[in-house]
Structures are given as C-alpha cells and as structure tokens.
Amino acid sequence: EEGFDDVKYVWLSKTKCPTYLKDWILHRKITTRVEDIVPSHWFGEQWAAWQLQLHKWQQKQLEWKDSMKRAVPPPEVKEGTKAPEQKQEGQPEGAAATAGGTGGDAGENKAVDEMDDEDEEEKEFDVFGVPNICDIGKGEPLFNNFTFEDWALLSIRFELHLLVHAFRRDVSDPERVGIHKDHILFYYNKYFRKTFNLKGYGVEAYEDLVELVSDTVSFNRKTMVLEPQLSGDLDAFDLFIKLTEECRRERNLLIDSGKETARLNFSQTALTGPPPAQVPPAQAVPPASMVVAAVPQQPRPYHQRAPRPQVPARSYAVPPPVNTGGYYGGSAAGGYGASRGGYRPMQNSGYAGAQ
Image (cartoon, rainbow, N blue to C red; front, side, top):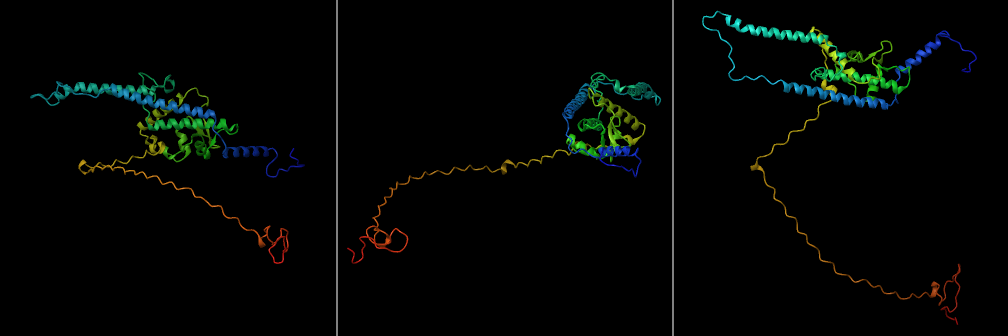
C-alpha cells in the first residue's frame, strides 16, 4: 500500500511493530497539548451555573449564622438573684461545697452526656443520605460548619472535575482520556482565565493537591493523566457539597485523634488574591483660625474697541498706450518681421530715403 516492494523489520518483529507504533502515537497525543483548543458553550453554561450556585450557598451559610446569633441572647445577670451559699459557722469544711455541688456535678454530667450523644449522632450521620443540603433540620444547611479551607476544596474539586470533562468534549478524540500532569496549568488558564496557584493550597506538587480531592479526580499512575471519577452529566451540584462535608468530618476525626498532619495549611491571600489597595488617610483640616478666606477677584472690565474708519477704495489710472513701433515689431515702423530670421525693412519704416 505504501509503494514499497519489500519491508524489512530490523529492530522488532513484524507482529510487534504495529503495537509499538500505536503506543508511540498514543504517548505523543497524551504528552502534546492542544494549543488551539477553544472552550465550548457547554463549559460556559456549567461554569456560570456553578458560580451562581456557589454564591447562593455562601449566602445561606451567612444567613443561618446570623439567625443563630439572634436566637441565642447573651446571658444577663438580673437583680435579686440568689447569691452563692457561704459556709456557716460550725459547719464542717466541704459540707457547703457538697450541698451546693450536687446540682453542679449533675449539670456537668448532663452536659458531658449531651456532648457524647452529639458525637455519636455525628458519627452515625449519613451525609450522602441528606435529601436537601440546605436544610438538614430546623433550617440548618449541611455546609454550616464550612470554613475557608472547605470552600476552597469545594471550588477546586468542581473546577478540576469540569476541566477534565470539558477537555474531553472539546478535543473530540477518544484516545485523549484526560489531561497530562504537565499541561494542567495550561488548560486551567485556558478555560478559567485565572492562575493556578499550588502554594495557596499548601502543597508543592499536583499529586499532593489531587490527593485532597481524590474522590473527584485522580492521576493514572502509568500515564500521569488526570482522569475524572464522577460522571459529567450530573443533574445538580449537591454531590460536591456532600463530598466536601464528608472529607471535613474525616479530617476532624484524624485531628482529634492526634494526627496533626491532617490539618490544612491553605493561604487565603494566595487563593483570593492580594487585598485591595488602602486609601491614604485624608489630610488634617487646619483650625478655623488659620484658614484665610479667599478674596474673590473681580472680573476685568471689557472695553469694546471703536469701529475702524472706512478707507475709500483705491482707484487705479489706466496706463497710457505704449508705442510699439521702431525695432520692436510695430506696424507703423520698420523693424523685425514676424518671420523667423534676420531683419527686413517694412513699409513706412523710419529710415532715411524711404518714400
């Protein structure tokens, strides 16, 4: 088919060469980035919908916290409250403490039991079984305890998920199953139009960051290609909230058990950008005694010029007629003729002897 009479296989056998060539082409596809890739309309719709939903969730969290602050008033000491009992004369030491401490010990034991019950409920709580993440009971959202680190993990979890699926759609090549590790920065900037800052997440390599969201995306250990773990046709974004909340609970359990390496070391400044420039303070106003009132200046009077006198138009005299006779070719005297050449006398010339 290629036009060769004979093909010799020097390095590999005839059966292994097609496999080697196919693997080489696949490797080149994976490690070569697509420079002219353009984000599709589907990506734009998904990205806009996510930003709107994320803003609604954050507003819901703020509203819930404000309502809880208003619902729990600060303790106030009212007048006429009973003072703590004091030891009376003749009463043995510790008697007052025992009499008054019985209720205190019971209250402390009750508080401890309530905390234990809350811990047990938190352990048995099924995050993925919540039907409404904005109301798990009494209007409390599932993401009520989210901190800055949790919101950052939620965002990067969805962004990497959307990036891989959008790349698959836009490249239109089934052999390109994901994004190579060396091209994550290029495609992230290409799609989201912002810089990918690893140090903001407290890590030095992409593998460490992907390990934090391994339930959403992961690296293929053989090809180092970022591949998705979730479907690209999700009906809602609630699953990302549930994944982030589940990771938050597991991380807190590890920290409570003494594993300090489970703490996140995110940089809010690096992830959200530099703070806005501060406005310089206004200059101090001098006291009224030092203020000199400005004297308004009167406008200069306008003097209208007198009209200029009319100058009579100049008259030009007609010049006298010029005598064209003699040697200058006039008709009344002799001179040079009209023809080219030498001099010839004309009639009625002014020479002596002419009649």
